[in-house]
Length: 185
Length: 394
Image 1: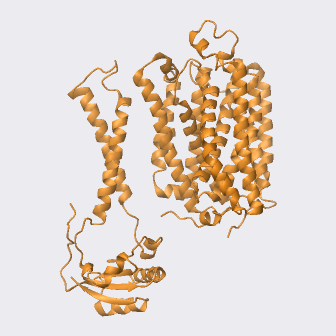
Image 2 (image 1 turned 90 degrees about the vertical axis):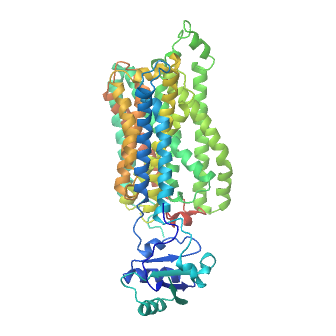
């Protein structure tokens, strides 16, 4: 179970929040923040922006591997369950076929593979995103309310090795931020 | 925006028609030499190759119709490849003609008197008789050629005029055309393949034929798209994003084929009714069983795992390997459907299999290559072309 509240390192600040007016501004700012070597930061937009993950330098999500492993696990468990039931736990002769009739096991194997893959996809996505999360320090910022409306943000966390309240603010202002503020933890 | 929309003079692809014609002639000569000594083998070999190429053309027709019906944007840059391939349907009608001389060799129900001592064949005789079979076959080719030529001509006309009303008209026609195609294709698969075992029943066979045909066409599309990029044709228009989507189609319909193939087997295996099981019994005995297992692993298991990854679909050469592999498996699938009627004792490969494939395939490639030289390689003024060129996977 993911924690409902973020587990954050102690410190006076959560980090720094910069607002950008347009998607291109945000896009170029992300490239600059990426190139400046920051690692603990995020971009926030009211709608999905194509190509932003490249501008941010995000790695590919490990989610496909989680789905593959959970899907194969589900299919394997489904098959083994039926083998056990039909050959040892409760063997019945069904329409004159052998106890171990693998074609009869395929539908359940397939369904459990799909079911577990879906669980892996949804729960894996939630886990990787640390969701559900009921509270986040960024909600302290009045400015941040625009994130569901018409504003674009970059937040840099204070425990990023390159973070410094003064110089990071200067950097964000120099790359086109409309306003910059420190967010308390 | 698009670098090379026609095959330039001196480009190696200009030689494709000549290569095809040489292949067709060589294949035909070998068939003419070996065929008379073994006419039954010739007709069965020809039938397999005919089915292989006609199924690719039918898969192409479905692909283009579904793009129109759904107003798909991404596939416009590869639509002309599909249009070229389905325009081969009239060519396939000509290549059906040799089979007319072997109906008695191919289809046991067509032999005069076959139904006399067989209650089931007597019951089926109002459908399975030679005149009605020929009328139906003529009807299939008539209907398919009509749809194919209508779509090809309209698309080419739009190259010249850029009239968006053409797209709207073809879109309205696409839904009904898909229904007509589904019905005729189902009956054609009953007539040409199922009736080789005239006592057999399977209501699923039409879908099975469609699934194989569509996998076959998408596999061919992936190979042609990659080959065109390599040959510096449309190499700026067909991007990695388009290859990725073709790969997704290939992956999805490989799974769909397996779903349909297994469903057909599963219900027949479970119910265990003699008039249904005869077909699979013939394919699970002797060396045909090896081919059955090969199809399970090669037409589903291996390509399913191979095509699952994102990078495999986005690198041209890895996608093309998957395409070539599935084309080969589509051929094996049809071979496995047809040949046990001739060789119930086991797999008996023949030089005529190769000769018929080269003859039919050479004609197909020659005609398609000839058409490609005479046209733009993309629908130049389709209203959605810009959308397709800019397409990106999320």
